[in-house]
Length: 372
Image (spheres, rainbow, N blue to C red):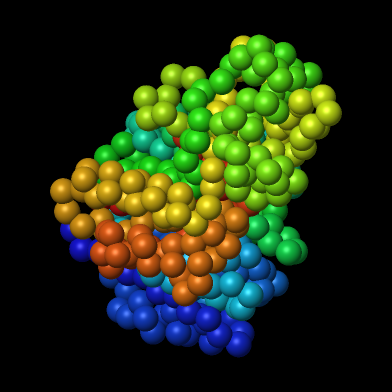
């Protein structure tokens, strides 16, 4: 199968960007039937016009995507400037189903899509959500149950203004995206960007988000033991590189959720975590820096490459705002690492305010989905 057409460009205004992308796309294949569009938040106010121009010029009716403070494409990142990344996918006519904004529940969604879901058995969905909407996380869990694999891929829009998502039209709030039928070839993995630096510990006493004891000992004593003497000398600044990993029960890949350290109490030996803690819960301390991020991304890419029988037709990459230039360094280092391992795969995506994989909302991760 031939690779998807894709394009990316920055410019002074949306018209220039649209024209440059359309020029890069060239002659639009007759089989192109799903567009992916990611734009920097500088273009939020012009997004309706940009999307309309792309629809008219390509004659592709169905589109999904989101606004990001940063966006990405094959080997390239864009920040702090008007920019767009576009990809045109080619799928069987019944191979996907775009759905508009989900708000409070999935009743209307089930009414519109229940028959298609029953017939096409969607494997997973690519979704985009609003980080300011309190129901988004619940919608993620609900929507995952409508797929065969219980799997979603995507992220929460990021913007200094409106956190807008695309599902044929433009949406504020909730969750929107596209379901892919069981026959569509897809593989996906995530990179945590962290590496555990100690064993799994058991919370033996906690109140709300404050861990009092781990393995029956003061929590801060255990933290200092696991991170080592050097880092323990400057506890005021370890929040930049030390995080808490919460192992996911039942995961066969050793997956875990990363949460911030939000406070330490040297006098009482307490550790405050950016999540609710309770006795019996497992946790481990993790380190995140440029080296661990590159190593973990490499492990993910090598694993994905080993599952490929042929070059992917295209892909979508959703990565955390805290990654990119902030973690991997300048000159699109994160996206160049993906390109150097997988080759010139057509790729588009954005820097998110939270990343979605399976039925969970993550932070500090990179989630890659490839169409095979």
